[in-house]
Structures are given as structure tokens and as C-alpha cells.
Amino acid sequence: MKITILTMFPKLFDSFREGPVVQRAIRKGSLELTVVDIKDFAPGSFRHIDDSPFGGGAGMVMRCQPVLDALRSVRGSAERGSAVSSRSTIVAALSPAGRPFTQKEAHRLSQVSHLILICGHYEGMDERIYRHVDEEISIGDYVLTGGEIAAMAVSDAVIRLLPGALRSESTSEESFENGLLEYPQYTQPAVYEGEAVPEVLLSGNHARIRCWRLKESLRRTLERRPDLLEGRQFTEEEIALLEEIKKDAR
View (tube, rainbow, N blue to C red):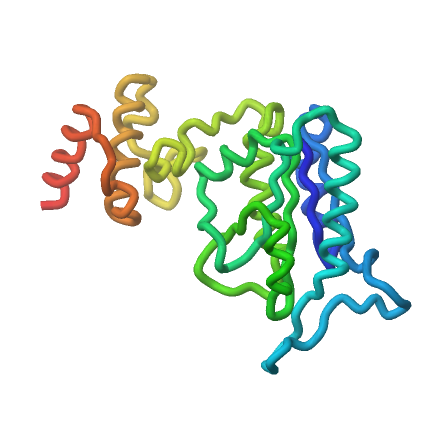
């Protein structure tokens, strides 16, 4: 998979690129990560990339020309150098007006051949840029200074799903993978400042451990994110465990 990030601040991605998961995916051949500086496509010595909005208002707006020229250069080189259909390329703009990003979306995006992420900045981008975008992505109902942090979040969630990105870790039981929050985790020492690890985790009984973890996932989801349980099709085991959780709370 190839991920290309269009940004005004490419140096912000230096540390991200050096992260162990990203580097492992690159070494395994699962990932090609490219960061493109939009300023390289701005004309003149001042690299004029933004301007004041028509109609007045505070802040500056990113201009069409530099962003779209950067996008065309990336799309053109990708499609010329690949036999893969252009439909395998998705162009997404990071925007608070976009569709909420979820684990399900991360799985979907991890299946495309080329993901191009455009980082907005200032007061946003000229609306005409969005006509060249396949979709908009939001990582939450709040406003960031720019799309760079959002692009890192989306990229990280996608990259860790690629083959070889993680060592022996399984993602199957992580939060949101099965519609539930992940169960509590413990490690050494077994007792710390008088607080002990739950006995079941030390029992070696894998059936009991699996049941405990499922129950704790249900408990944690019910307490912290009950919205995730709305419309869920519960198994008979989950229904029984939910009844136990209700009894525990009495």
C-alpha cells in the first residue's frame, strides 16, 4: 500500500515516519509512505499558498492552484507507474466536516492501493479543491490548527492493519474490533502497592480467562461507551454475562 500526504509542513512527519510500526511496515514491503510539500507547487519566491477569503472574514484560505497541482502530480505519477485501476486510489481531505473516522473505516482504507491525504490549514481550503477529493475525513468534533495531526492518526490506524506492521500482536481483540472496548490488561508484578492482578488471569485456565475478558469488555463498554451497544446483536453468552454485570452493580 502507498500512503501519500500533502502538507504545508512536511517536517512534522519526520518523527512519525521513524516510528517502529511505520518502519516495520516499510521494511516488510507493506507500505510506501511519501510526504509532499504543497509549498513546492506555489509560484514565486514567496511561495504564495494562501489568501484572504472573498467576502471578508478572519484568517486565510488555502489557494486552489498549489494544492491541486500537488495532487495532480501525485495522482499522475501513481497512475502512470502502476497497472492498478485508478479506482484503487482514494483522495481524502482531513476536515472537521468529514465523515467520522472509525476502526471500520481504517479497515476499509487499508484495502486500497493508494491513499492520498490532504492536510488543510488556516481557515480551510478553497471549496473548489473538494471537487477533486473522493471523501472528507474527520477524527472528531473539534478544530485543530491543521490536518497534520489528523493525517497521522488516520495513517497510524491504517498502517498497523497492514501485513507485517505488528510483530506477534493480534488486533482482533482490540477496542472497536468486535464492537466492544478492550478488556483491562495487567503485567508484572502480580501485586503492586497492595493491589493484586485478578486471580483468574493467574489461573492458567484459558476458558475462564476468555470468559472474564469478554465480561470485562462488556462491563467497560456499558459503563464508558453504551452507545456502542445500541443495535448490537448479542450472543447468548453475552446476554448471560450482561445479567451478571447488572447483578454485580446492585
